[in-house]
Image 1: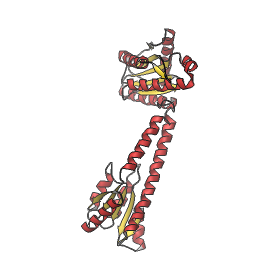
Image 2: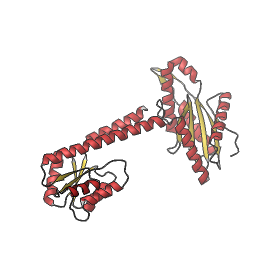
Image 3: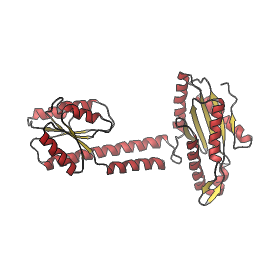
Image 4: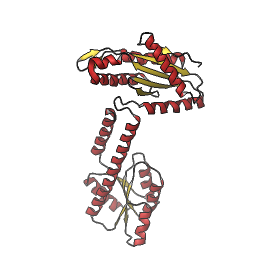
Length: 325
C-alpha cells in the first residue's frame, strides 16, 4: 500500500479512537431516559436519546447515526421490533448492533425480536452491569467489522494503486480510460490521452542508485498530480512512464495542460539525499473531438508514438499525434 494510503487509514483510526462511540437509547419513559443517559455517559459513550420509535429510526438513518443502539420494545409511533426490521431491510456498509429492552420473557417473544434483526436483548428490570457488558460485546463486534472494512480497503488500494507512487497502477488507469472513453462517446464530449516519460531515467539510477530513482519517481508523480485537474486521471503505466486521461479536453487546451505538467516536473531540481539533480519529462498527446468507445488502445498507441517523437526531437517537450480528431 502506498504510504499516503497507510497514513489516511491510521489517521482515521486515531480519530475514531479519540471520539466516544455514539449509543442510541430509545425509551419513552423519562425516568429510564435519564437513567440510560447517565449510565452511557459514565461508561464513556455519547448518548443519543430518542423518545419514540420514529425518532430512533431517524437517528439510525442519519449519515453519522449511532451504530450501537438500545431499543425499548414498546414505544409510541414504532416499536423496537419494527425499528430492527427497518434497519435490517436497508443495505449498509457499516453494521448497526441492536439490543432490545423488553419486559417480555416468553421464548416466542424473544424469538420474534431476534428474527426481526436484534443482536441481543435484556429483560426489564435489568442490572446496570448487564447492559454494560452487552454494550461492550456489541462494540467488539463493531470494532471487528471496522477492522475488516479497513483490511478490504487496504486490499482494494493494493489491487488498484502503484505501491511506489500511490498513483493508479497499469490496469486501473487503463480501466479508467475505457470508462471515461465510453462516457465521452455517449455524451459526445472530447477526450485526450497523454503519455509521459522521465528523460534519461537510466542515468538517474546509474548516478544516484535505485533509491534515488525511486525518490525521483515519487516526486515526479507528486508534481504531475499537482498539475492536473481534480477530475483528470493519472496512473503509472510502467517503469518511468505515466498515463493521463483528460476528459473534456482536446487540441490546444490539451496541449496547454500537457505543458503545465511538463513544466511542473522540470520546475525545480530533484533531491537524492543531499544531492540535487535536474529531471525533465517528454510527453506525447493524442485526443478525439468525437471519440468512439473502442478507441482506447488506438489513443494510447498514438500518444506513445508522439512521445517517442518528442524524445527524438530532443526531449523535455510535448508532441501532439497527427490524428483525425
